[in-house]
Amino acid sequence: MLKKLEDYEKQIQELVITSKDDLENFRLQFLSKKGIVPQLFTAFRDVPNEQKKEFGQKLNVLKDLAETKFKELQTELKSGGNTVDPNIDLTVPPFPTEIGTRHPVNMVRREVVGIFERIGFTVSEGPEIEDDWHNFSALNFPPEHPARDMQDTFFVAHPSLPKGGLSPLSGGQGGAALRTHTSSVQVRVMENQKPPIRTISPGRVFRNEAISARAHCIFHQIEGLYIDKNVSFADMKDTLLYFAREFYGPETKIRLRPSYFPFTEPSAEMDVYWGLETEADYRITKGTGWLEVLGCGMVDPNVLKSCGIDPEIYSGFAFGMGIERTAMLKYQVKDLRLFFENDKRFLDQFKAAY
Ligand code: DAH
Image (cartoon, rainbow, N blue to C red; front, side, top):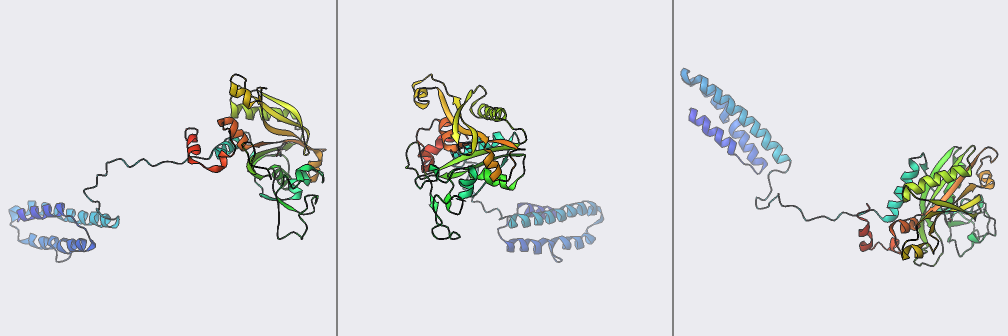
């Protein structure tokens, strides 16, 4: 009798099943009302007294074993079972899978956005198809300004516009265009928010230019805007110096040169000092050692007025930079077109930077 119990125990331990039917057969054989385990409990009565203790213990062990095994097999079946081909070696390392990279334009965008987010700037976006008001008029471009010219701007037919409403000189009276700069977003932000405003607006912009190593008809910009009471030119310079040192390195030197933009007064361009040590430095900086990296200035009172902000109470600064241009400087890329071709050999070079 005891030997029988041990045999059953062994049988259960070694049992392998491959289907639901096998599982059911196991249950019927051992656990059902007329199965082996209940039958053994019935037989327990006839076991001679001196064997009862040992038999009883072994029988309980067998019962537990049968029940646990049943549960185990049930979960194993549910999770797909042990169907792995024993000839497959699961410990062999897989073929290396190539991991992609972020696009260099995205890497620069994320980095610049992060630098400004850390000092409290929000991120805002606007539409790529803009009206004349947000792209030009509200930004103080006079109607005859050359930037509105067909040669720079892609004007678009738009179903909501009257026929003939696409004139580049429409002066805010309609006319849709692919935005030529992300400065359009600062207008939208000022129209919709009350100062204090601190925001940066990354996005895609479009210009009707011949494609070359230095120009493209599509590129990306990041616009910055800061409006509050008593904002000064010195605040702007300090903010931009902070940015330059975060982005180009802690020792970076900057300079501001007077410039002109319709939407800022005074306007400036910011250069960073690149150095003049190698022949490449001479070429990149055209022999000056300095590189232009962004346009900036104090927001023109006319622009504030157009956007419903009182220039007697508030002042602020704005700046804008090209992302491709910034990436070209950072990664020493010589041809702008590379950013748009998605040639894997080019993109793979940014793996380390990522
Ligand atoms: N919108 C200018 C461009 O596309 C860049 C720019 C210059 C933006 C000066 C600004 C600014 O906000 O203040 O070239």
